[in-house]
Image (tube, helix red, strand yellow):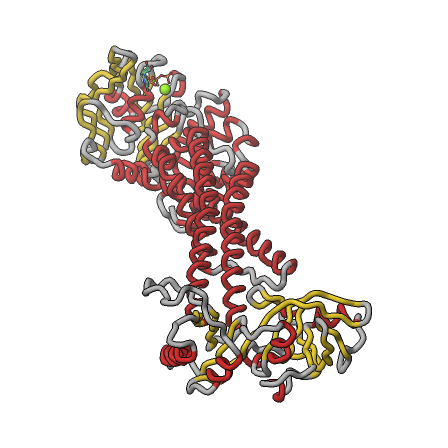
Length: 230
Length: 402
Ligand SMILES: Nc1ncnc2c1ncn2[C@@H]1O[C@H](COP(=O)(O)OP(=O)(O)OP(=O)(O)O)[C@@H](O)[C@H]1O
Ligand SMILES: [Mg+2]
């Protein structure tokens, strides 16, 4: 489903270029549940942003579902993000003035889903995530765990095939983090491909496959035994 | 993202920044209202003039002594002193075909008194034809009698202000008043008709032309009003009038003809132009409002960078983001334009109450143009900030970076 060939990302830091992601190969099949670990600054978010079509690589090739993405116009990339990819951000990134319901409504709105179809879809997602009672609350009135779940609801309301979660438990305590991870595991069981960045080794251990990044390089990939034991 | 979605999204946004939105709406409203009010004054002036002219009857030809046209012809042979227009000229004119009525006008000022009350006013010497020609209506009594057409008679018709000043509520009918050193009997009082081309008909007296000749000791007419049969043959009748006067004035073309229509058309054109200019001046304030819109949009884009990044990450295309920000400005402009229309029309309504004789009215085109300019300014000045928002890189924007 995801196929990176020598994908590289460089940033210009002052005068000298800085390689955030060394040329990287990575293949992820549909239905996988993958944890990305690594120290801070190792390029995990960079990798996720590239996979999520939020960023363009400076070199290499990225195929999403067999489709090369280098030459796609911005418009087409946005359309792919809309329909294909759900993104959960480390910092929630909820719109403060909108209620939980309205935040979840955003992707449906952007995708042009008719109004009357939205309500049942949003309600179903919120119910699944256990947020039905707080649907009309604003992010400021919700706990961190609730906000993260709103963010997940927003990421999955379009029923994307690919869910990218950048440290979805980073701001949460143990219990709330566990609940979020269970949620992601449930989504994966239902067929969604899930890529999750995490610093938490326990959570990573629950994933069927783990990759570890250090200084922009994949130094460890544990697909074989994970897959065979699954 | 459909228009309804964008509207509700932006409505929520404006509700959130209520004060800022209100101030901007107010700015635009003032701009639109000033266009409405200023064009209402211009259009009011136009209607006022048109109405005053139409009150004279549209088939009116005014003959003035002396040639004041500068048509570039040869100068008159015998100096520049024109011959007087006389009652005889007027009588001759009334026999021309195509002419319905002729009202000579002799004018002067004199003291009108009754007992201890006195007033210096304009005295018009004319014939019975004056009343139909100038569409003068009577509140009491009648106009000049037919016998006064060519004869001095001690009768007069008073304007209503004058009548009230002299008689203080008592009936002036068939009372004697003194005009200059002569006595006249009041046979009628004019209805309030307002001003007609600068002459206050309410404060004057009409007496037979021959009486005025004696009173002012002159035969020279102030002007002759000629009512034509219809507009169809106006040019032909004008030519006949000119020929007749030339014949009676020893071959000299020493009068000026003013046709009602030509004058009206000129005033109409001038005042329309004036209205347009007033509107354009007022529209400048809309441009100022546009700059404010731009400022607000830039602030909005800067403040909402993370939100823009989010929208893009969620799959908003650059076009969608631009539309969203343009719509915000357009929504503000539309609200401002609506408020401005209400404000302007309310001001016009108040002005109409205060000055009922002046027909203030914002022309429809001005209303529409004001709204259009407001929307256009909104879109134009928000374009650049909206494009900036649309260009933002999602990853950087999510971090709040430009
Ligand atoms: N816009 C940028 N400009 C310059 N350097 C950047 C930019 N974005 C990221 N970097 C650099 O790239 C490197 C990788 O960043 P990245 O955000 O991918 O790290 P990360 O593994 O997600 O770290 P963390 O676990 O702290 O989130 C970092 O050293 C960072 O400084
Ligand atoms: Mg990161």
